[in-house]
Amino acid sequence: MSATILDGKTVANALQEDIAQRVEQFKSKTGITPCLAAVLVGEDPASQVYVRNKERACGKVGMASELFRMHEDISQEELLDLVRRLNKDDKVSGILVQLPLPKHLDASEVLDAIDPKKDVDCFHPSNVGLLSQGRPNFLPCTPHGVVQILKHFNLPTAGKNVCILGRSDIVGKPLALMLMQRTSETCGSDYANATVTVCHSRTPNLKELTSQADILVAAIGVPKFVTAEMVKPGAVVVDVGINRTDEGLCGDVDYDALLEVAGAVTPVPGGVGRLTVTMLMENTLKAATLQAK
Ligand code: NDP
Image (tube, rainbow, N blue to C red; front, side, top):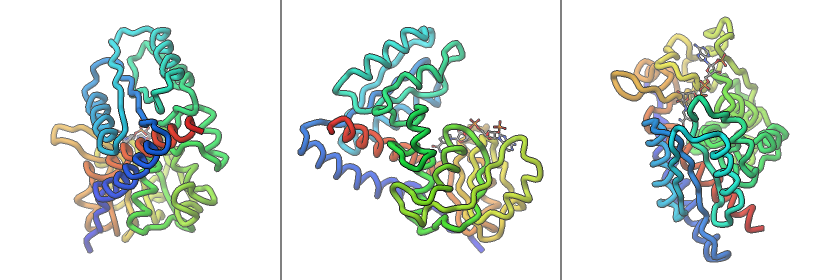
């Protein structure tokens, strides 16, 4: 048996074409070009790559982007002032503060200061609250990307056992919230209604839980953590992990070994990462639409 490869590039390209068309329609209707403001503090190499990819994606779908490069010694108050300025700027549709921030800064306070209508990462407590109630303003980018990959390849979640490794506020927790709802905002009820198990570093008998999953999502940040023995034969495996190792980039699953066991698997790179950026574009258009109302 050889698993189907769930190529994120194909999914991202299809979605980006659709977003580009809607951006064009929005521009001709309102005269407004949606604009993403990205705030990058310090010189973290991975963050620089992510921000560059986001700017490039904006250009590809016909949106504007503005990059605010701040010195790593910026004070909390200066950073909050910048966020407040961007909140008030009518030209800015969405605000993204690239994480992680240097240790002396309080990331929660900065993210909480972003206007919820411009919160394209969906980190603001009011947006997280709306998401948990099943009436989201924005869908968080990486979890939304996971759902879009499943939808594209016709792999519904309704009635399935989904096991998520990782409970972060960025990936694991919001993905669990989305998949346990009665319906998905963008993909319908077939891409919700899952029975979700969320695992973390204090979960005993991990293998017992993962091997019962019809759909297994790995988002822990440990290279090749998920081995073939942990996966039910024929299961769908979504690898969110992006790990930099001496041998290059790899995910949280042992991809080569899983090809023989899983029914379908996402590659790293070229899997979920592509979708994260794409869903950020979707949210920036949504933000521009909310503000134009
Ligand atoms: P965090 O470090 O915030 O969270 C990791 C989670 O995994 C925690 O809940 C932690 O448990 C759990 N965990 C860690 N080790 C183990 C273990 N041995 N067994 C079980 N659970 C474990 O990471 P993120 O959610 O931000 O990111 C996860 C991965 O996804 C990273 O590789 C990151 O680079 C990648 N990523 C990829 C994106 C993409 O676009 N493809 C976007 C965002 C992230 P506990 O809570 O108990 O500490």
